[in-house]
Length: 269
Image 1 (cartoon, rainbow, N blue to C red):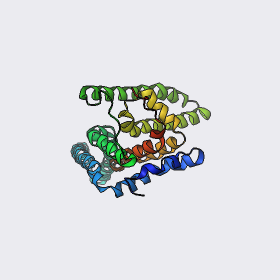
Image 2: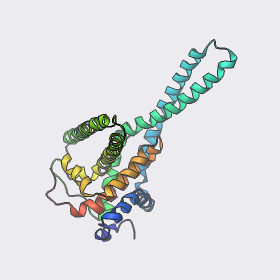
Image 3: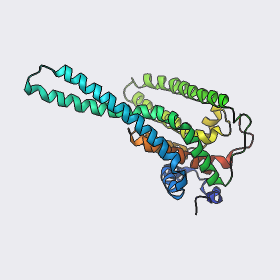
């Protein structure tokens, strides 16, 4: 089946249970295959990666240089036998900065590449379904788009704090408390990841935040396994440079296959 004819099998993949679990895991692989079949979409992936590499590389080089200078000053005057401490500190600093840079890019890289990610998702939907999402009133308003994006991030923050804080305190109780906190934290992370990677397609319909959450829930268990594998990919520093556009692609394909066929025309804000 070609990339431009995927809509023919929408109904065939609306499975739940074990089939849904396996399907959720498979979407990053489907995304890789889809992008290989449609090389014209490569620019929407490569340009954000290039921007992130330049920004991340510049920050890492500057921070590493400043850190090494600080270590040199700290170690000045030590005897030769203690020089191994300098090498140890340099190595630790390099690793810590590598992880920190990756985490910073995960937080801000999506913002830098968001215009291209939105365009990537739109093009993917056209190829996957054979038609473009219908126009929604107000979709061309830059001010409204920015305001909705800010509200989306704020509501995610409220969700994280509202659920994260109780889980944090529950985790102080050994045994069952630790288990509940661990499972709950993973579940919260999976939910946030699903919201992020389904959002370009859901936002084109101007859905409310609660409706977006609802579709994550209604797509269970496939959304759980999709979110779990995506969370793992974006949690690896620098691997997430490739994982973010890949997961945007996977999330849009998931939306087209498992959410769009059930979405009512009036389900928008």
